[in-house]
Image (cartoon, rainbow, N blue to C red; front, side):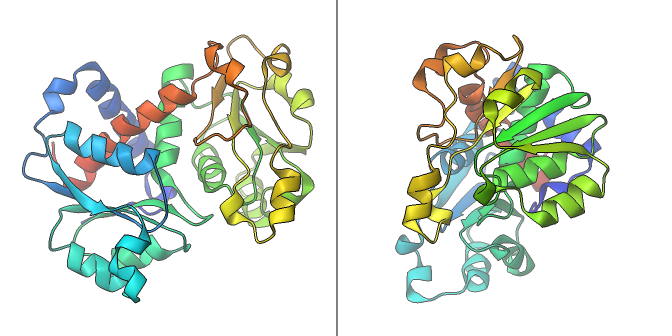
Length: 304
């Protein structure tokens, strides 16, 4: 039995295999419509989510399976003080696979040690979000046709953004990838990501405060929101939340084949006028999340 807690638990060959299956699902969804008939996914979301939870549910329904679960800790026995270990041990009896989101870093890892079925980490605090990274990789593959030879701009909250940390880890395994890290001083990428991932793998990167200066050289621009829920101080959040707003004017300097990604939800860091730009990929990206999660469920359940 295998779980997925961190994107680096998957080899690049396994990621390629998942992407191939996801593309096959996109091409022929009917072929997969009964693959998980009789199987049940439990969604244990101790933290609010729209896209991730619904895309997991849509993925399981798309495979002909069933779904049960809860959408916030208030509606679970966690509100009574039940431990994560006890919750997953019990739910293992009701489901064949569990997708779990939790505000505490490491909670899905603890869950995987006690569960009797595979656990998928659907986001743990500011730590990991491996299925979002798989979604990002499927989107990059469909947009660019490659993972090598790319300059990737990551813009916004690089300190607390788990999607950013995960994609740096995943993309650092490919050749000739360069990162441009765009953030205010207070939201810079954590030192351990620089040391353990970028420096360790000799990945080229630059840090800058200016989106305008960075944008002309980018192949991919990954925008993120400044996350109110990760701040201890409301004043700091208000001061930083509108630091970067991508609009049509800023895109005038960008490459004609730039791909704009965003894990969503967006607040106001991408102006609505950008939605009609052919370089905007974030709504397709959200849809890709369903297909890659279908592929992952099949893999972890051992369904051919």
